[in-house]
Length: 409
Image (cartoon, rainbow, N blue to C red; front, top):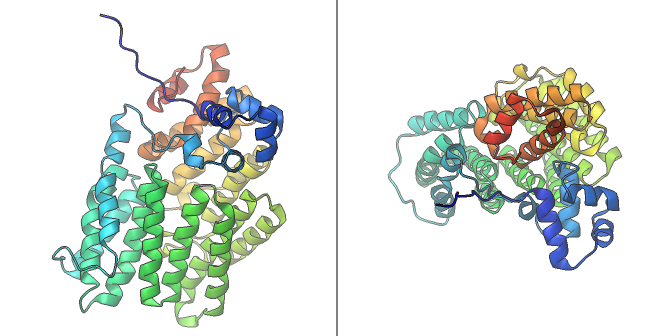
């Protein structure tokens, strides 16, 4: 019998080239539309530059008149039991998000509110401490429906606030497993619930959720608009009795505003937002309000992320050296730090930096294996490292990582 060949998923560069050719555009025309140089676009298409820069990918997608997801190939489709387990719960989560419209009747008999509070905490641990998308996706649908049902009773106010936090987890799950359209359903549902509460903190939380979906899909202009509006409204309503939680919400919004501005290539504006966020973090210290983990450490991790894609990777590495990610009680944020630092090191194109980049990616994978195997940026970075390592036959750790990420070697 002939040997069965497993099809290899196209690289991002190959998808970019296919999209450009579908439009009938030359490299020069497409590069001009994207605002990148001809040589950069050509090298990305040929796999000579890793297509793991989120800001550049957003520019190319806009120039090619498509979504970032079309170029990155989301949702990821590979023969991987870890990825399959994480994505398997997507239909159930989607159905729950549709059903919890506040104008709809409850579809279940909920458990008592204290049990739902404990269930929410368990779901949050699955996401933030274990980065377990499979476990989270399995438990979320029931929690969402039960909180929706509880909100129709005497515990309405508390249930609505818990529901917003659960919906944020649904946004994290849907975006994490590669379904940005469903992430927007979650974000919009969050706003519907927040408007019902008329709580300024919940309204800000909903705008943060919506802005996060936008930055995750390369839509930086609307993200900046949402975050700016939320910051202004929150600042107008600051009150002493809720100052701590309002300030932590304010700080995380300032960070995403800075990230969005950086994605729009407005470096000075981004720097202004980041400076405000750092100032806010100095006031709040390390916090855990609504599992946002806002504080000096997370602010610095966001700065690293911005510099990786929008500035000098060497500066990103220097910033990363001053961060202790273990200060955060959130493995998903720790994994983000290691992945972004690995991406920055890989862009230095030095053998010692490449070796350090592999170690960083392996650490990120150890902390959050499902997140990293579903990460298109991690895959592209690993692919670029493997391409360079071929000349030295590659290291066993890198080859193992690439096999788990389904990167062709």
